[in-house]
Image (cartoon, rainbow, N blue to C red; front, side, top):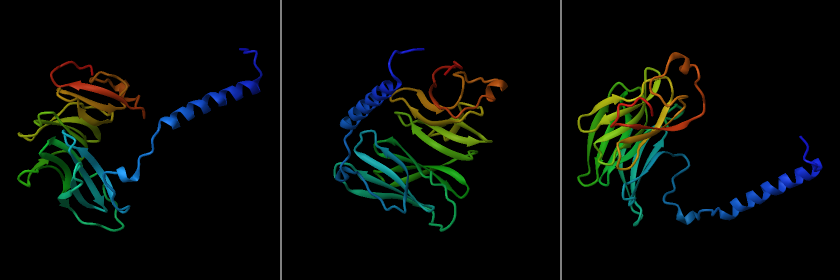
Length: 239
């Protein structure tokens, strides 16, 4: 394959092309001002989750400090912050799960908090109006990775581990019943309801868009993740 151009010239043009592209990206990028930060925490603390309320007027964030879990709600407009949840104790020089607690809003006045208590995962529903909490156990789950409520708050999609598998589960909030939606050795993560629908979108390293996977398909596990959707109103096995 011959271009009829000296190699040195090709390299110069290649460098110029990507330098120009890089400059265009840099010019369009605006560095956020420190004063625009919604919150700042101590470096010894770890933010495990952050979630805006449906109206985006409130910001909930969870802080994990060496095993001590705290949840705060910040009013975006006024800047006032209130601690609404605290659990656990600080433990020095011990390994802790920094992914806990998890957060998502059920509605504008109810915050869902997933935490690990006394060997079990639980869902806490915190009511901003009454300042009360409703606790429900999430039974038979070895680890909960993510939670997302539907628009009406009646259902919640979970990514959770059970028997060595990371699958998507559907939680009926009022009945506290859990149904498994996927069941294979692929890693199904970060479920989220598409607003005002019964469709869940999630990330997975599955190699097929079909829920039924044969044994040969299991041998093709990959580290590449793609997005898939699951419609609760259909029995179609294709995602």
